[in-house]
View (cartoon, rainbow, N blue to C red):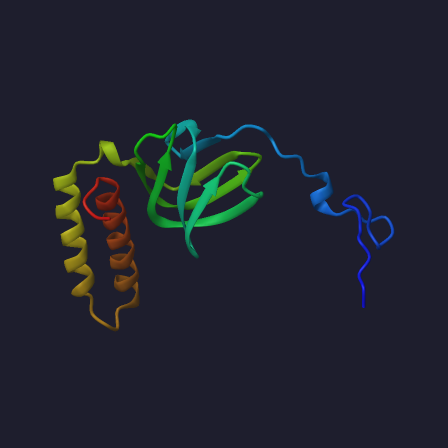
Length: 164
């Protein structure tokens, strides 16, 4: 059975327009990225690429990305701007919104990797790892707290450059 071509602005359903027909591509090739914590703005600048630690895995954002709202896990966000090296930012959970080349990240807490002491973060990571391994199997609350502390310590250590 042959299919008839349907122009972008026409729909076989009366009074329905395809969403793509109304989408206009911007010529801007950079993203405006804002990382906002309750006590400060951690990052507010242009970027070429962003990688976020979403609750379902790593999420890459480039210019022209479709609108998106995503929950973020504790982890490391990476930002690359103007062909420079990647900047790491430790995020402690939150949400990200992407709309028209603007990425707004609202987090519980965040810290730039270049402001984290590598040796202190390594010690904190090792301590958190030890505490997690020593949690009694039946103590659910202690296990959750130790897991969260481990995730925070790992994110800070990774952002500081201690792990890949």
